[in-house]
Image (cartoon, rainbow, N blue to C red; front, side, top):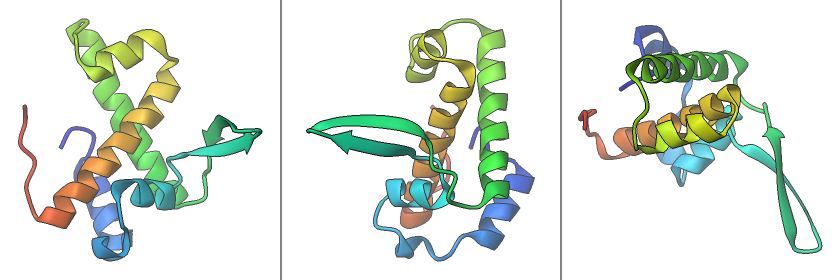
Length: 120
């Protein structure tokens, strides 16, 4: 999987509890501290910075993997997919956290079903 290397994979395997403990990929991302903190008042929801409530080491490895994917994408030129649009419109570090969140959600789905990564 892009963004997950041998160090990140071994750290995730050693640290994560059973994947069945999480109802969804968002629960796993929240456990790692990769979801934005929500403030809501009067029916208006505002999303702030990431919560940073989870494992700092895993979050850092996922962030660095996402930055590696983003830097490779920027060298290859613009595209029409989700990541290229995100890089073009948002700050780079925010795009990296969003990509790390997406990687964790995909990882949860792969671990839940037992599938392997298939490149598009």
